[in-house]
Image (cartoon, rainbow over all chains, first blue to last red; front, top):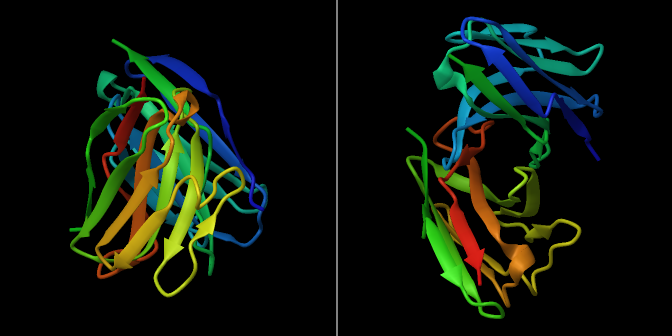
Length: 112
Length: 117
């Protein structure tokens, strides 16, 4: 089955710096990619959904890059602020499959 | 929009007893509901996936005998943790996906936090 590896498990950056979280996956049939944010004590909030056909996706304050050749998905927070401090999870799903496969998460701390 | 509610938000049960948690989808039809457990170390474990008109599929290390699930309609699912012990503690999340919303995305409820004494 699909294996999703997420790095780093912990990340600490200063306010205004960028933060990059990366996931690699194994199933070449993976088609849908998701980034979720989980604030302390809260559930998962969908940040962005990415289709296999699009390599660069921009959200508010972040960019998601998909490299299908290397089977790598990354989340780049361009200018982190303390409100970005949370756990971030990537998730992957293949077309026709119901299961979402999650990375183990990255705990991001943004220091003011 | 698509919303998922879970009840209760937090529960404490004595070791060896059972507790039931519920998941409700609002604003879309939940054709599939996945139940996850998030450990204190934050990793997610998929417990089972329930799809309407299909058998509930349990992941390795999880069984119907321990985590019976009901998915009677397109807006509701429940799961019971039978004979709960310390290793069952954690945050139980339901993720629902279906028609009427973005059918590619799994929407999560706020979770039910289970503490076992």
